[in-house]
Length: 82
Image 1 (tube, rainbow, N blue to C red):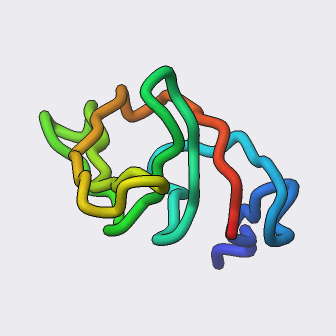
Image 2: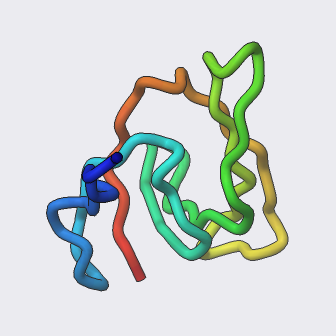
């Protein structure tokens, strides 16, 4: 019998910063990098045998700018839940 509970991020309240694994991203999460602030617009998916995580994102200030970002699957990124 499996009695493990699903792990919830430590700060799951809306509008707070969290450090998450890529597979814990949700549509609407936001993160920033050197090019600006981005919003996740599709659920992340895995590639390369589960070693690379991809997420479709768009610029917050320019909604027409859509990109697919990739990270190592074990990386954690700072996101803001909206």
